[in-house]
Image (cartoon, rainbow over all chains, first blue to last red; front, top):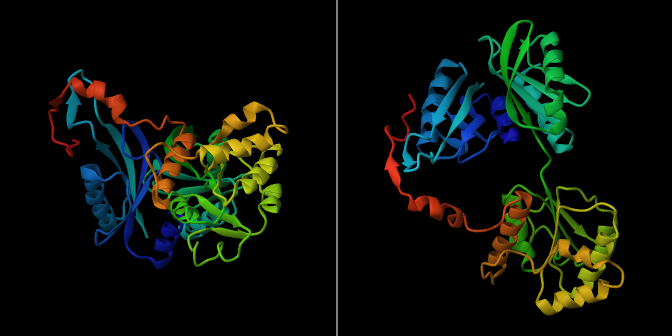
Length: 100
Length: 274
């Protein structure tokens, strides 16, 4: 993945890099997982898929436009809950930055 | 230093298996957000826009995380300013050594590559251990098992699979491995009960009984694997369980009791975060 990021920086193709910088609770992927989003919405790597990743892709396209990095909180706890009050998801803090 | 040059240095360090980590400012003054510092044992490089003093302060603050090679977000204060940084370590990829370039070795090498292992295949037969059959391997060693296992570095990130064509080779390799001072993370040996008994029989005089309890044999988890590809799945299920210190039991066996209690709908739809 580091080589891919390096290549993107070299060819100066407009893209964004999303990195999970911390997590709480149960998340599909762990801290340090990365995904590159190109300006056309193509993806390299995954930060866990599903609607959480969808949110990050949307944010990433904004980041490519504005050129300003943001930290986005993906809350996966707001779906189903166990009857006993336990949550079946977690929260991921995703740092999204332009790669240019 | 430009970000591009920083990443080049990072790639180089990873390739050379040098201890390295990357720091990203995730919360700071706007001009600093997204800036990076590359940490090496003796030195640190900052991206353009990060002052030398801040590089030094960050490197000193990250020293414990660097030596432990932890990946995490950290808060720190410097000159009355608060920073949140993401410290990312790059531990070297685990080394998988496949002894025996036969039918099972092929899918095992492919899957090992897929799972991020640095794959070495060893065999003494050039017609078996070659680029055509093992295009995905990082290293092919056509030499005797004896000479290879005499000198190969053994670390806690080394995984060894004995998939040889005969039990006399397993005996030879285990004699080498078990008399070495360093221990690998995992030794797995393929074989029928009879073959395994034969191997241990020959080693029994040279090594204490408890030595054998660390050898995973027959190799793999019990999923009824038969074909080479199926055996590869079974082997890696076991290797990952060992590496991640997990039981290898079905996940459903833990959740079943909880799930009986039922679910209820949360207040918001999945995807709404605000």
